[in-house]
Image 1 (cartoon, rainbow, N blue to C red):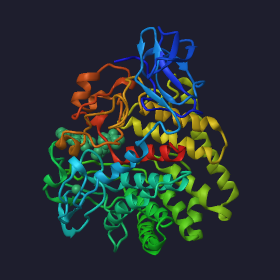
Image 2 (image 1 turned 90 degrees about the vertical axis):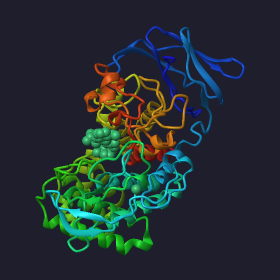
Image 3 (image 1 turned 60 degrees about the horizontal axis):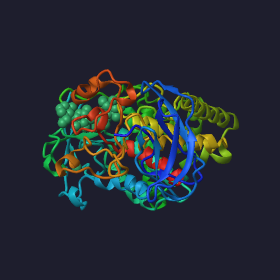
Image 4 (image 1 turned 180 degrees about the horizontal axis):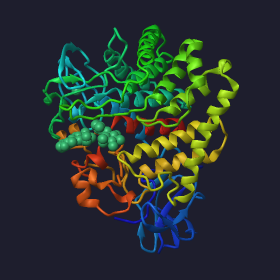
Length: 513
Ligand code: 9MR
Ligand code: 9MR
Ligand code: ZN
C-alpha cells in the first residue's frame, strides 16, 4: 500500500487539490500516467501532526495542475494511486450513490443483477406493546427500504434519509429526476406505519432478532413485529410528510392530512418517553428520549405546508438546536424555515435561526483548520463516523445559502475527498469505485451474493473498537481515524445504511459532482 493519500477518483480542474504525504516526503511531483511527463513539481508544507491518525504528515498542494489527464502523485518513497483531473472525474459516483436505494427495496420482487430476489417481508406484522406482548392487532406494513445491512425498517432513520434526498433534489443546481421516484417508494411505506385513528406512528417493523448474515431478504421468514408508537418517530413522520407535500403536489392533501394527525398525537402526548426495544426485540433501537428537535422540525414543515399560525406559535417558543443525524434533527427545521417561511417569517426569529446555523458551520470550519485532511471530525469517530462527516459537509452547504463563503464549499468537497481515499487508511469508503474501495460490507445481500452492491457508503472508522469483536481484534489501541476494518463481520465500522448514503448524495448533488 502506498502512503500518499488523495482522492482516488480525482479533481475538477478549478478545484483545490491537496494530497497528504508522510513527514519524510518534502518534495513531490505530479506525473502523467500515459507518458510519465512531469506536469508539476512542488514542495510539501511543513510537517503537521494529525491528532486523529497520530501521524506527522505534510500537505502536497497541486491546485496549479489544471490540465485534464490521468496522473499519479510521486515522492521519493513512492507513487499514489492514479487519479483523474477533468470536468467529470467522479464518473458514475453520484448515480451509484442514488441507485443504492433500489437495492434496499423491501416487499417487491427485486430485479438487481446478482442481488435480485423474490418479494420479501410481505406478511402482515403483529403489533406489540411495550412489554413485547402481542396486542392482537395485525397490520400490513410492506414496502420501504431495508435500513442497512440488516432487514429492519425503522421510521427514525427513514425520516433523515427522505429529508436529505428531498433537500438534495430541491437545492442541487441540476437535480436528478430519479430522486422523487426513489423517495416515493419509502413514503408509501411510511404512510402505512401510521395508526390512522390516533395518529401515532409505529417506531419500527422487523423480526424479533437479526437473521444470519448470509441470507437474502426473502430468506428471512420470521414473524414481523411492529413496535409501539413513539414520540420521536411520530414527530419525524409529521415533518417528513409535510416536507414531502411540497414535492408531490398530486398527493398534497393526503400527506398534509397524515402529517396533521401525527402532529395532533404529539400535542396530546407532550411527555411521551423515548422508545426502548421491548425485551424480546433485539433489532435496531433508534432510541431518542428527546423529541423536542423532531417536534420543532415538524412544526416548521407544517407551518410552511399549511400557513397555520398555530404552528408558528409553537416554533416561536421552541428551543433551537442543530443536527442532521437521526437523533438530532434541528437543522432540518432551521433550513426549512429559513428557506420557505418567506414573508411570514418573523425577522427576529429568522435572525436567531440563521445565527444558530452559521455558528454550527463555524464550529465545523474551526475543526477543519486543525486537520491536515481538512475535515471536521476532530477526535470523535463514532459508529457511522462517515455519516457525521457527510452531515457536517451538508451543514456547510446549507450555511453557504445564507452566508456567501467559498470556504464552506471547499471544505465540503474536502470531506468528499476523505471518503474517496484521502484519509489515514488510504481507503475509498464507497463500494465499487476508486482504486481501493470497500469490498466486504456488513450487508446481508452483499454477503449472500459474494459481492458488494456498488455505491454504498461504509459507516467508517469507529474509535470504540469494543463495539464489535472483529474491529477490536484488528484495531484495538489504534488512533481513531484508523479504527476500521473492511470485513463483513464488522458491523461497528463497515456496515452500510440508507442514512449514510443520503447525506453523501446531498453533498454530491449540491456540489454538482
Ligand atoms: O447485523 C446486525 C447489524 O445490522 C446491527 O447494526 C448490529 C448492531 O445492532 O447487529 C448486527 O447483528 C449482529 C448481532 O447484534 C449479534 N450477532 C451477530 C449479528 C451479525 O450477524
Ligand atoms: O447508526 C446507529 C449508531 O448510531 C449506533 O451507535 C449503533 C448501535 O446501536 O446502531 C446504529 O444503527 C444500526 C441499527 O441499530 C440497526 N441497523 C443498522 C444500523 C447501522 O449500523
Ligand atoms: Zn424485505
